[in-house]
Amino acid sequence: MKTRRLGDTDLELSVIGMGTWAVGGGGWRYAWGPQDDEESVRALLRGVEMGVNWIDTAPVYGLGHAEEVVGRALKEISPPPLVATKLGRRWKDDGTIYGDLAKSSVKEECEMSLRRLGIERIDLYQIHWPDPEDRIEEAWEAVAELVEEGKVRYAGVSNFSVEQMERVRKIHPVASLQPPYSMLRRGIEEEILPYCGRNGIGVVVYSPLQKGLLTGKYTREKVAALPEDDHRRGDPRFREPHLGLNLELVDRLKRVAERYGKTCTQLALAWVLRRGEVTSAITGTRRPAQIEEAVAAGEWELPEEAAREIEELLAEHERKTASLC
Ligand SMILES: NC(=O)c1ccc[n+]([C@@H]2O[C@H](COP(=O)([O-])OP(=O)(O)OC[C@H]3O[C@@H](n4cnc5c(N)ncnc54)[C@H](OP(=O)(O)O)[C@@H]3O)[C@@H](O)[C@H]2O)c1
Image 1 (cartoon, rainbow, N blue to C red):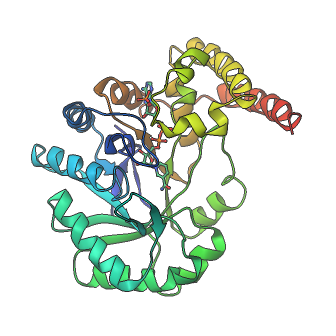
Image 2 (image 1 turned 60 degrees about the vertical axis):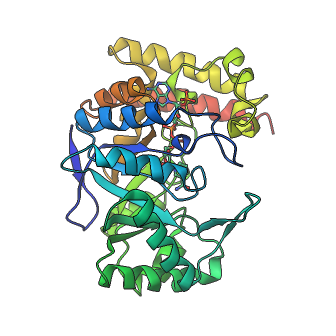
């Protein structure tokens, strides 16, 4: 598997990373339906076996459960992959999730993550959301202290704007940004990606398959049959009038992919990796077959002709989407 250096750090990340949001399992506000922990562990082990060298998780995924499952997988892997987790999303006993960036909360969260993951140091510790926004400096100071204490190797942010990165960089270097990026969500292309490229900030993009939509494996029937506690039921991209247009686009993307002997999943991953500022694409991994398919994209460079054709399809899709409003 190809690797890219994470910004100015000395971490070499495989261009495909494994995301564990769905590994958190069912029964919480942002669940992806029920999940078999054994299968999650098998998927993570399979990914590492195939060359993926890093896992992204967060305490809030399954309210602590995803980190525990990652911890179980880590026990079975030697040498261990790099582990990235996050801070700043807390929850109450009734499952309500809220943002907390107080220094004491960050320190407490770090201890709990280390315990659940069964590790002594977090390779990449990211502020999950700039929420509450007026406390990002306070949280960043706490993370800088954790680096000093040896509990964290590198500090990153997620869902931050350029202005927010500028604010925290004055306190401690920003190793990486974790933003959303896919053919259906291109908001970072004009300002954020060039800024990160210029400033030695690595970029690890999330939801490159737009939560599965761009795999080409979703149909209206499959979406209608999503479990009751799969949060995608409420996602506008999985609902009409957008769903129909998205499925129509995916049908056309599939035909492009087939011409290169690839799947739509591989096309979508290679497409985000065409941007040099992107260090790695984090794809949701809860079944071994999913990561097996994704890994092949890490070896493939998107041909320029395919990129041009995709650009045309996306422009047309955007026009149709805009006309809905
Ligand atoms: N920082 C943040 O705020 C933030 C936000 C979102 C995500 N993330 C991170 O980024 C990771 C990736 O995001 P995501 O989970 O939305 O990623 P994604 O890769 O866009 O979508 C993942 C989903 O797509 C389907 N899928 C994946 N590979 C497939 C394959 N080869 N064939 C068929 N279906 C496949 C699976 O859904 P089914 O199994 O249901 O089919 C999988 O759960 C998360 O797990 C999390 O670690 C971070």
